[in-house]
Image 1 (spheres, rainbow, N blue to C red):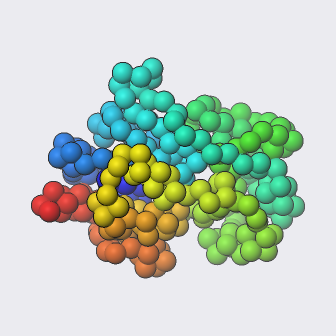
Image 2: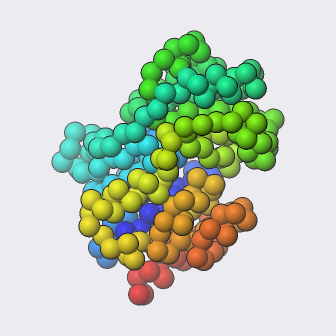
Image 3: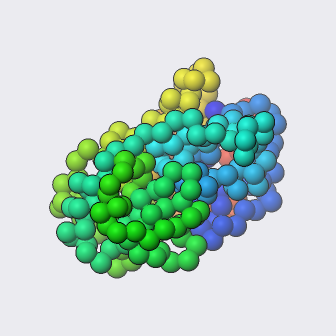
Amino acid sequence: MVALDIDGTLLTHDGGLSPAVREAVAEVRDAGAHVVLSTGRSVQGVLPVAAELGLERGWAVCSNGAVCIRLDPELDDGHEIADVVTFDPAPTLRLLREELPDGLFAVEDLGRGFKVTAPFPMGELTGQVEVVDFEELVAAPATRVTLRAPELSSQDFHDLVQRVGLHGVSYAVGWTAWLDISPDGVTKASALEMLRGRMEIDPGSTVAMGDGSNDLEMLGWAAHGVAMGGSADPVQAAADAVTDDVFHDGAAVVLRALLTR
């Protein structure tokens, strides 16, 4: 089982996918490995990447573990949402808005897009984006909540979480001005472990590759975790190995090495 983060691992942060990475994913897939995309992206952001990589069958972990989809070309639209974990976003969003009244807030609208308090920069959210009143935003259970505050650094986000005392949720600071919040205990690793058991894969036959703080648990979960070159020190420390960065096809290097085992 090979779990692969998307942005910063397979794709550059502007969406570029190199031929070397595409070919390496196909070679590992064709060799019989269960290739599982594991990402913070929502379902509608994962499907085009899976298609570009030729991953028509299998599983993908979306929304940092809160959503798992099954890919199968015989299904309507080629996929189905198989597992969903939600939480009540209201307490968390109210705390964060008190601290950052000018922050941009988004709640995932599962399978469709996002509901937001104000427009996000073009291209940052996938699917349909609907601007709604804050009370509507917090009214329904959510799989994922995002706070965008461009003026804050990664450390500022960590300090914010400690200051407001978020409870009953999981969180990850994104590569840019993002704070992603998920149901308590839900991570990429928790979803991957569920899928590993479902597919009856030996724990020792698991590999994961990623570059962000939302990959920390996944890298620790895998029998062999690989951090991308250029990732933050805590990410590299959580991994068993470090490969080249995304601009030098670090993912392809690892995937081709797996084929020689």
